[in-house]
Length: 130
Length: 125
Image (tube, rainbow over all chains, first blue to last red; front, side, top):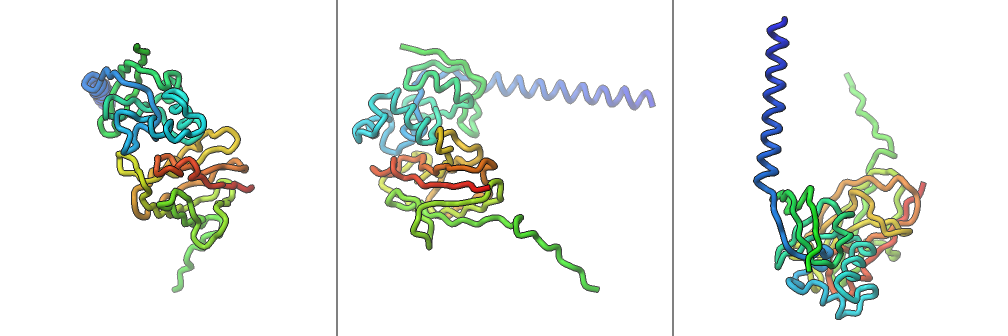
């Protein structure tokens, strides 16, 4: 009986160690630092807008979209979009929308864990850049 | 021996809703003039959406979006943020539990009329 319990305990301990190791390995391997700008998913993913996302909306004189910041916030707050990070032509989804929203339209440096399957950055820190 | 088949109560059957997300940047309900969806709070819904490509689309291949927002503050309804690829897609969803007025918006810049691609969505008790 006692031997069984010890064996169970060892198995549990081994399992926990493996989970911790896997978590550590995942986060270590996928930690990225990216430099780009916080934009909205609608403009960022528009097929015609690569590299100049908001021009389309601003040129159309869409109400509430006069510059990068206002266009980003309009598309997210009024039109159901999401805040994303745009790095040249690459678009990254961001797990913490509240945090990303504080930097709408800004150039930023983001450090976080990238999930390559969903192209989403998790657990990130963010700094404004000039 | 005759085995009785389980009878599914009417309220359990999902409310099937057909929607056309058209190339002219309008949501349409086939067979209905009014652009409005009305559902009961919390009822199961099967949404069958046919999406047709407009003038522009998203780089990930989506041609329209179908996102449900609260009308009062434009807050998103969790689980109702759908990306539409060309063709017909079926989504199994649950209606919001809070009765009131909602709005469906397109989240893909699909044409010059994208901003107007909206539809009323009413949730009744």
